[in-house]
Image (cartoon, one colour):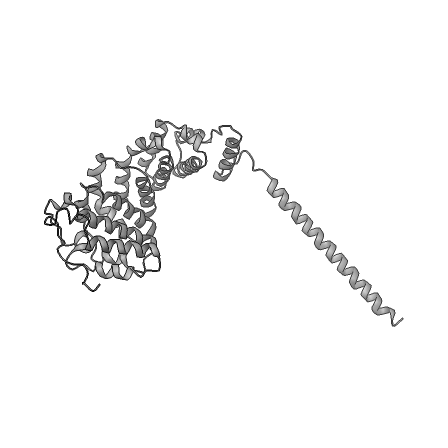
Length: 340
């Protein structure tokens, strides 16, 4: 009897282990069934969430059928809604344009005008969503000319409303459009606002602002307005090594284009005068510390920043058109010592 007891206890332990394994296997199987059922479950047709709408629309387009979702949303936008609902509709339009390009291409000029009319809405959220929708639609080439008609309104919004998200949405739209000459007078008027956005502390808006300014710096009739724009006394802090690499790179591209532009024969043909706190004085004036900033950026950890800093240095030391008109546009002083 004494020898049997441990054996019996052993059998009991084995049975418990087997029961535990069976229970665990059963639980795992039930969990598997639940997960499989969840994956195979289709969302209800009546769901109005943006994800469900996009999912159903994509499925229909894959089967060669027009989902009609963009048209339904546009028709809904014509009705009277509260501010929140309008924002949701515009947000859904943006998603659908990106996901359903074929259906989006079937939109009309009236549809563009409808979305553009939301820029006059009193709610900033609706304005932002309208800007995002226009940005999505501007990816379709045939709509760009129509969307350009709203350029002046967009410039007005980003220069009169101090809202970082609105700035980002508006500038992204402008950067995705070829800006026609008829908006140049308005661009001159909003230049101080663009410079303020650049000197703000919101990186997304700063990058978008500098990209637009870099583009405008290549316009002969806008170059002086940019160079004579007022900046803060600490403007060159934007070129410190601690700044994000994406911002530094764009700033260096901007500086290179300004340097090349001011040394072009066309620009050098006129004797320009700049205010004391102008961008020109901050970058190229006698007391500018740009050289110090550039030399520090040559050893920046990011290679594209290093390369672009070198390009700016070369443009400052060797203006591209000096050989063409040697007496017309000589640098007023050297930015770097001979040893440097």
